[in-house]
Length: 492
Image (cartoon, rainbow, N blue to C red; front, side):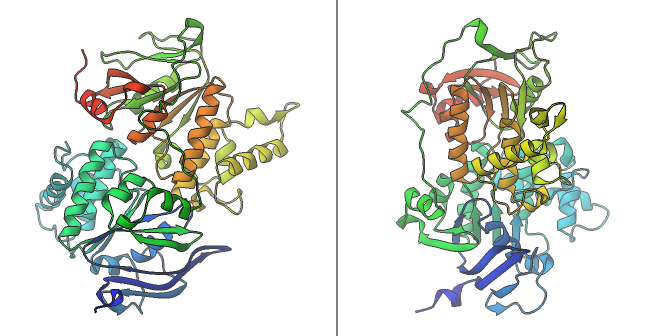
């Protein structure tokens, strides 16, 4: 009988990595074989991204051994070496050059596209892959990355990883690849992964979305505190067992269990009334409601939230948009719209609510520290010191800081732009409970999400298409089929 170690394309033995006093990876021994999709789960800071960074050549392990295609890596392992062996990685934080076009970004990854027509060659390479993974993607090779919404950027990043270019393609690491995709695009990608694996490829899928792991992986690993604590064939495990291995308890809101009873809509409880310049139904949100925004990504949901955020409290603009509350904004694209990269964790958190810390006309640093530690504990932010730079945190933990920044404000309306990107399942359900409790106390939430299951936590849902609100659903009426039907419906 042939052992797994002999057939594995990649094998690690007691792989470890330390950052200062933090042991990010602790003696990880793993094998990855051709023709399998391996799901990797764990809370934020569990060591998943560190392991992937080592496999892809971004980081060098401190201890342990790495074997690729049966050969022990003795020399300096780097990204070029990894790509030469057929290993690609799509990181949670995108690595595209925003001031370059799709074709120019592809040229940076594929040096074979030379000669006077290199743009055409590189662009066609990329478009061919986009056509395979995301049919009807609507992208062109000459578009600038900075002009694209984050969903389209994610599609480009994924397609670039699956474009063979100069080297063979054997193992693709996907770190939260659907976190910026809508359900339709995510399904296209996951369907393609199965074809890739069937052809002999290897896929390492890091995801906090349970249904993706359970439906698409062949084998699943759970990491905690830098160690692999659980491993099983996916068909032989369950959601409950995975959640238990991660150290969480799983709450549930779903079909047949609406998030809450309908709330009365009286004029004195109106908080928001808004619409984009295009025609379509207006959005209205009332005191204590959680209102969801659904539809295919890039169809105006973020624009509508930003429009509301610019309205002045108690004033109506020329289009009749009204806001009767103070707003706070939770950005989904944290690198562009959320974090201050040169600031500490604490300062990133408290920047929006320092006014709440004023005592006798001066900022009370003791009160600021108290509130910072309250939200670190509430959201289970994994850090040894809040004075460390925000970039020292994993992507999911950075997102928790943005939640703390918004929830710590005395704002009556919280605007959430697909805020659960890269957040682990335990924290997600804790945040869901916080949102519901805050709504019960009178706060209003407007919540754009690309994760369909999250819509079950909303009282009402507006579906958008091409910048217009084309339908409204109650929690009891919600279904994936109905949201998809409305997503392709033109406004009246």
